[in-house]
Length: 134
Image (cartoon, rainbow, N blue to C red; front, side, top):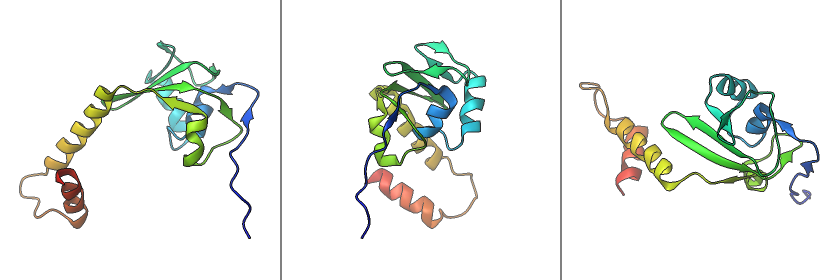
């Protein structure tokens, strides 16, 4: 019999920004998070932040991903990378609806921008188009 799933305990110490972004699943790897910080795509409290900057509960982290800027409020620092279902316990998403609309619109443009003469849509393309227009 499997043990019941228990939420991971938050760490008492603040975490490095690149580690925190990786632990709460904003980036797939810590090196991608660090690269984004060095490129100026990540800001803490509206100031550009380096990867080694420590984040504390209550701080506002903005992450620019393409056209969309995600805004997160730090709730706690996990001890390690957490499962997707536990992410809400460590950060609160405060991204405005206008930013989410930009992401949806960009996705629509990408789907509809098939190259002329590339043939029929693939099964995957068809499913995405059906999901978009249903």
